[in-house]
Length: 342
Image 1 (tube, rainbow, N blue to C red):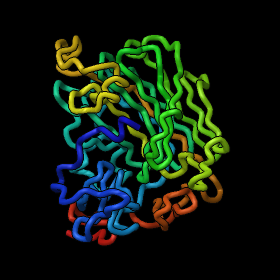
Image 2 (image 1 turned 90 degrees about the horizontal axis):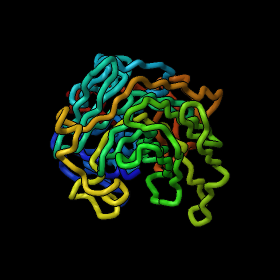
Image 3 (image 1 turned 30 degrees about the horizontal axis):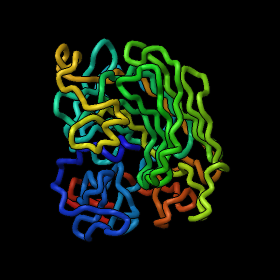
C-alpha cells in the first residue's frame, strides 16, 4: 500500500550499510533486506525481512507461525520495541518500529503521531497464512493524516483497510501481489458513522480463494482469486503468503511525499491540528484485535509446526514451508544463516 511503501522508521539496532531491491540484493556481511529496503543483521532479519532481496533465501529468520488469539489492548504489556525483540513471539504480541510511540488511554492503546514525525507502526509478532482478523478501532482525523489496518507479507503481498482523515465516512480497501502497483484494485466502503468518534470493527476474511472486507460484521467487498489472473506473468496476482497484522498512523500529506500521495491523503498535513494542539499528537485508538488462523490440513494455510520460511524466490504460496525451524535469534548480531551469532 501507499502506507507500507512510504512509512519510515527502519530499526536503529544497527545502522544500515546498503539498500536492497529485487535487482540488488544485500551483501553477505549485512545479508537481511528489511521491509524498508535496507540491509543489516539482527532486527533486519526478523519481521518484514524480504528473502527475495536478501543475500540468500535463508538470510531472514523463519517467521513465527499463526496462533489464534483475542487481544484486548488495554495496556502496553504485550508490546515491545524492535530493538528489544529477538523473534520469540510467545513473549510479545506486538512490536513497534523505531520512532513509534504507543500510549494507553481509557483502557485502549493510542498509536500516536506528534508534529513532524513519521507516525507509528505496530506489527504482530505472529504471521497469518490465511484466516480471519478483526480490529476494533477509531481512526485519526485531519487533512494528510492516514490510518491503516493491513496484512503485509515479507514478500509484500498485502490486504488493506486505509482511512483518510478528511473522509470519516469511508474505509478504503485494497490489495497487492508482491507490491505490484495496480491502483484500480482499490474500492471504497462508504456511509460509515464518524470513524474518528466511533469504534468500528474492521475485518479481513482471507482464504486461498477469496478475500472479504467487512465492517461491523457486514461484508463491504469480496475479491475472488479467479479474478486476479495475470496473462503476462502467468501468475495469480492474489495475496497468498504468510502476513503480519499491521496497525499504523502516518503522514500521507507530509511535504516530502509525492503530489499524488499528498492529494490522495486529503492534502497537506496540518502539524498544528486541533488534536496536536490539545493532546500533542494525532492518534488512532485501538481497542482490540482478534486473529483466527485458517487451520488447513495441508499447505497452503497450515500452522501445525513452528514457523514459515521460503524455499524459492518466486515468493508464492507453493514456495512456503510450514516447518520446525526456530524463529529466535541469539543476539542482534545474528542472522537466519547464523542464528547463534553474538
